[in-house]
Length: 242
Length: 242
DNA sequence: TAGTGGTCTAGACCACACG
DNA sequence: GTGTGGTCTAGACCACTAT
Image (cartoon, rainbow over all chains, first blue to last red; front, side):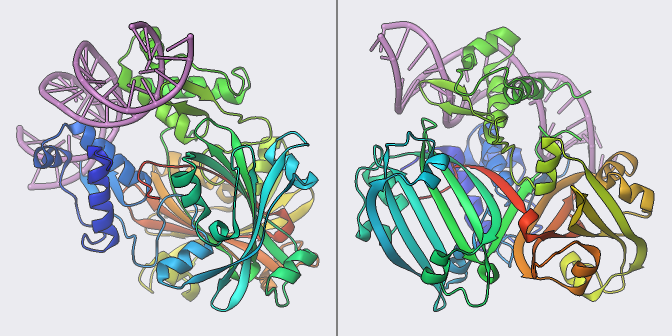
C-alpha cells in the first residue's frame, strides 16, 4: 500500500539480509548500479541505504561500497531496544498473555507523575503477565489516558493493544522514551509473577507519545532478573562530538 | 573544522534547544524559511532537521511544522542509550576512575568467544572501577585486540581511552551492539566493587566495531543494581511494520 | 486557498579507496 | 586514473493542516 520507492528497496534488502540470502560481508550493488537497476534517482537509493544502515542491516564505507552486516545469526539488533519477550518470539517461542485487570479508574497518584495529566483525569489500567515457557516472568502495567483511548476490553488486552490503537482508533504512535532500572520486588510482583527466589525486578518505564507529541501512555514492565535481556544497536551518528 | 552545512544547522539548533533558549513546544521556522535564512537548498535543511528529529530534539508534523521537544528538563534522551555514569556526569557529579589492571595478555577463553578472534590472539585487558559519590559501583572490563591497539598504559586508561584511540591511533569507531542482562555477582565483583548486600549485577556487554566493520573491542560493564540506569529514546521509523 | 512537511529528480562537485 | 560513497543544488509534485 505504501508506494514509497525507498521503502520498497529497504524492505527488499532488509528481508534478503535477514533471511541470509545475502550473506554477511557481501558487497551490495553500488548506488549508481541501484540507480540504474530500479530506474530511480540516486538520492532515493541513498535514502533506502540510509535506513538499512540505521537499522543495522548494512554498513557503508566511503570509496568502497555498502556491505551486509551479520544480522540473523544470533545477533538480531534491528534498530533500538529489543526485549526478552520479542527475542523469545523471534526464536519461535510462544508467549502467553494473562490479563489480570482491564478497568477504567481515576489516575493513581504514582502514575499521574509519569503521565503528566491533571490529577482528576481517568485512565484505562491494564495489568498483564507474560508467560514464557510455563513461567510468568514479565508483569506489564499499562496506563492509557481515557480522553484518548475511550474503551479497552479484556479481549483487546489479551491481543495486541497497539494494533487496536492504530487500526481501530487511528492513533499514530510517534516516539517513546524508555528508562531501565532495577528495583525491589513489590508484593504485587510476588503475587502476579513466578518470582522464585529473586528479590529484585528490572523495571522498564515506557513513555509513549503520539504524532502531535501528546504523552498518552505510560507502561511499567517488570521483569524477573534472569529473564531480562535487552539488545541495542547503535551507530555513531554525525552529530556526535568527541 | 567540519564545514558541513547541515551539521552546522544541527549543532546550532540542538544547542539552543538543549540550553532552553528554544522552549519545548516552540515552533521552528519552516523548511522554506530556513532555506532562505541560510541561503541553502531545502534538502540540506531537511537533512539537519532529520538529525535533530532522530536525536530527540524536535518533532516534525506534516502540514504543521517542526516543534522543539522537552529535552533539558530532566529528560535527556539524546539518541540511544545513556548510562548511569553519563547521567551522573551531566548532572555535574564527578566520577573517579580506579585502574586495577592494564596488561597485555593472551586472550582469555571467555573473551575469545565474544571477540571472535583466533585463540592465539593477544589482547590488552583493562580493568577499572567507577567511583561515584564515594562508592565503587561500576566495574569495566575492556578487551582490545592488540593487533589494532598496540599499546595501552595505565595513564591512558585513567583518562579517556576513546580519545586516545581516535586522536592518537586514528581509529574510527563506527557502530556497536549492546546486550544488557542481569547475572550473579562474581567474587571479582565483590572484591573490586562496593557491592553491599546485592547478590546480582547488571551486565552490559558492548561489542564495538570500526569503520571497516572489524570487531576490535569487547567491554563488560558490571553495575551494582541500585546504581544502574539506562535511558533510551526511540522514534518510530518508516521501516517498521505494524 | 496558502502553508507545511514528504518524496523524488537530474544533475554537480568532493573525498576516499584501489589498482 | 576509475569507481565509490558524501554533500549539495534547484527545481517538482504530493498529502496534510489550517483558514
